[in-house]
Length: 239
Image (tube, rainbow, N blue to C red; front, side, top):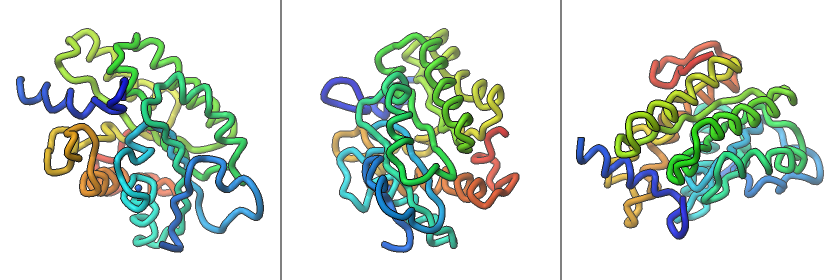
């Protein structure tokens, strides 16, 4: 995520643990694609994030938003998933562009997935700032009556125990404080599996994205259906 590598988070996880996106499903392009005309039927999901959401290094049919839309369609949910991912983005960047993203949509999303913070960690940004930015993002979405699914990030041990403890606590704390749902770790099952990463060893390949979608998908589906819970405890998060 920093410099030439928008998401070195995956590499950091690998190193740390080695030592100790077809009709009717639609994946809309960058937010604003649906700004004019009649809103399409079905659900609209906004995915606000960084390179993981943007689909860095992947074809248009292989990124997170396309794969999530297809996954939902296969389970009877007609959903347009809007790609509001920007490679290299931090929580500060997401916070600054959120109102513009929302104002550019043809209608308010039925759900917003917030998947930001990994770049903050890579840049060793003070966790208090990351927490404040994410809290502001959640508050903006809630002010517009948009349900929020917060996708957590985690700091590897090589960031040091104090930083890791402060950073990792951000997501469950905010989910509980603001009454939003939490998916504990966006990269669960992918971050350190080389079979699920691109040749750069940093970003998920199509199979890796599929694993991410399989993980977070049940919670997205449950929220769109208005269910109070999901079967898989690992995706249940918090209310």
